[in-house]
Length: 458
Image 1 (tube, rainbow, N blue to C red):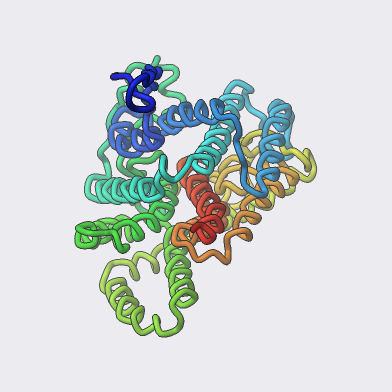
Image 2 (image 1 turned 45 degrees about the vertical axis):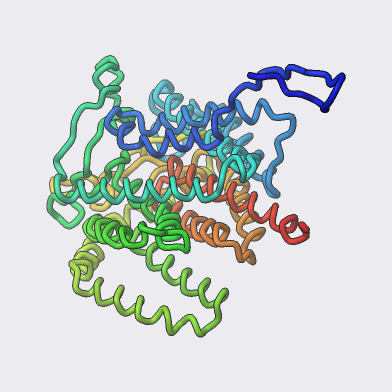
């Protein structure tokens, strides 16, 4: 580097400034994670890619002189403390359950603890990084790209439902580890789960995620970012390309048999109408009417009505889910009401009904473990009533803080919060959905925090 001259004319002094260390762009952990996601799926490391992406983000936070947190963050810290404390209950017997081997319990407890820490890191990283270093538009485009990846993966699950292969990680790991039931689902790429939901074998898309319900949750979380990025003012060429992508996504949505996804998409559409009217007045209804008519006609002409009818005619899982939820709460109240049991437990026996056991026609009808069939029930069983209150309070506080905002990114974030609070009842959102939500919360917090400064700036 050439010296920088200070002053001018005779007697000027020349100072050689130290070479500045070149910094990586603040977007690189998210860019590597999301742009490389198809590759991470092939390698079998999609779940662990999130953990690796959190390492440089966490290091960046540690390197800062100060780290700020959003209002209500104390609720989340309290929840994390309960998660840690609940680990002392891993070997404790829970009513109506089998404790099982501590080794497997400790493995899944650690896995879930890491996910909570990763979610915390990404929230603080987004909120503490300046917009100039980590542009909101860049983050939105990355999440919109993930919608494209998820849509294509879902279509692949419909067209080639039996396609699966051994990932590189699966090959290099010892067979005893790779065949672990919990780990195998995470590292073994497959395009669909074959389930007897309608009384016969039916593929449910899952690529590039581990489970069919995870695919549905992730698609719904990425959709608002895709719509804003590809159909917004700066959409450019993406506006034209966006329509085929939506068609591609619609195919696996219809054939997913995913009632939670269907319901959330309907609620999302109603939420969008309310926000358009709030921001632009009732005159916007005239503009929304043609779009609504096209959407309704397209849905009626598709296989969706028949699929919905068939799906709601085969609701064998409803009794099982309802009974499991009741027994989950009952077990926690009787055994460990404050901090829960740290992790899931296998149910002892069955619920004494046809819905409580596996059959030849419905192997999935077996009673799932306590703490499954929804993130909410995991928190209730694993972290007890105290953990549940702290967990829900954090998200409700964040919703209340932003509900009146008119910023586009905040409106998107509020949609994700609504989706999340609905889906935690039926989906396990601890994973990439929670990661995406924390990104949205970070963007919302940063945007609304800086808004008053923008208003008074000269």
